[in-house]
Amino acid sequence: MTVMCHAQVKISDLFREMPDSLLPVLSENNRLDMIDFMASGMKAEITNRLGGSSEMTMLTDDSLRVKASDGLTMTLLLVTPLDSIESGNKVICCVQTYGTDESMLQSVTSFYTTQWNQINQMPPLNDDDTQRIRALDMQTILNWEHDILKKD
Image 1 (cartoon, rainbow, N blue to C red):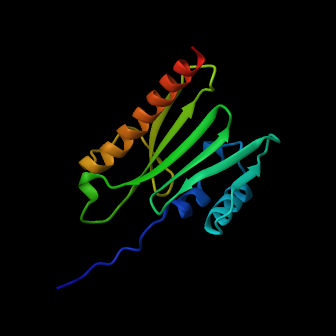
Image 2: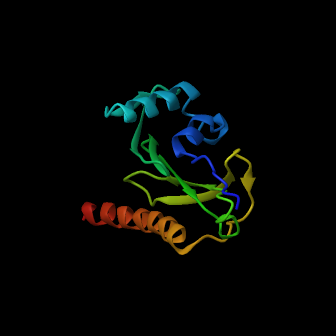
């Protein structure tokens, strides 16, 4: 009997290696600082390339959230496609949410391999991972509705 052991990929490692082109406002050093601050239990707020403030607001082994600016939040989720459950291969789900308190929020979801090659369509996912992605979409809707109601 052969037992295969796959090293567990962490979203922080993938965020560290993420191409600058996916979130140009943050440099590699900015991303490294955010990870280090979160690991130390500190507020992970940095000055970004544009001189503004960016903050990592959540970090777990398989997900993270960065408020890159007042108008952009990026959430990364590490998910397992159905055809990769036995092999342990993972896919990165990247949800970029655009908008401010003054406008309707819009999210764009993309998928990447762990080498940051874009996947052209959403791979079939297990129910848990599908629900995690839908929950992000619902959170965007609820935040937007909250902002609209708050104005009245």
